[in-house]
Length: 398
Ligand code: LMR
Image (cartoon, rainbow, N blue to C red; front, side, top):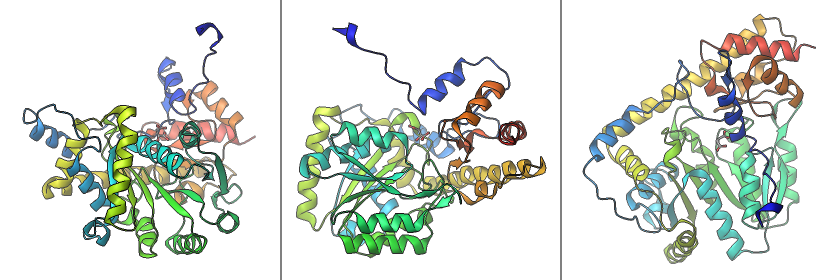
């Protein structure tokens, strides 16, 4: 029966890494996947993580975690997202479980939505992270879209977004990127978030936030949680996916958190029990090591301070690379506008390049990126930014 099975298409993001690895050119550059690199192009393990590992090593059993994961890690995650003194945490209104990073948190939520609200859809922004489509589709939840990005201005299509929120049936589910929108790097301003929140409240929509980059956008996790806090102040019930892949560099550890703010403690207990019931036949219980690292870092004031410093170093390096890339393009005399490179925020620059231009970058210059024109800024460094700017100028000038 395997005979009828055709080879699956390559993943639009992870497939780029495969192609990059197969290229033998010494000039090759990977600005595909969103994974942080230092200025020498090397992956980084944060010092706070190394120190947490030293403290953990040899001190732990390798027992199963509960189905909902590490209670300590979940508690620390909630404080990070909802605020240290959050009334919602104190009132035990949040149902939360450890999840397999951001993807796992989204997937668990999508399965929960499908099970308990089977006739609903999810509205996703255009564009959004490619995997969001797969996650809700494979969970059996139909997808709808709402306007988000404005190609001409390379910024937010705020009026389109507000119209689509207004015109969606009352009580719709909306997927929002809490900060550092992937792939565009375009976030609403604080004022715009307030308007979005109040419009969604008026319509009774349910906001589900994917927060894969807390701390990575501005360098300050509190600031990056602003959108969530605005929605909380407005009295929404909401869902939230958190990931430690980027902001703690724990990519392969697959550690994250799914939380759902309920009306009261009784609801939260029921909801959590159902999330665990979904997790059990999927993966039984989540992995231990990454959760221990996160709870050790966030639970220790000294390590948390070190983490805040290190996440800021990463965010600042990327912000610096934005300025350098733009400057290089302008110095080369590129006739195109490039201010969006520095206006956008987070790991990605949505360059505006066409799939054909991206193909030329790859085929002629060995620069690997997704065909939607997204540049992972983390792949740029002082050694390759001039080369990349020159190549971009070459493929965009005619
Ligand atoms: C990305 O968008 O590049 C990252 O979130 C990695 C991934 O899993 O796609």
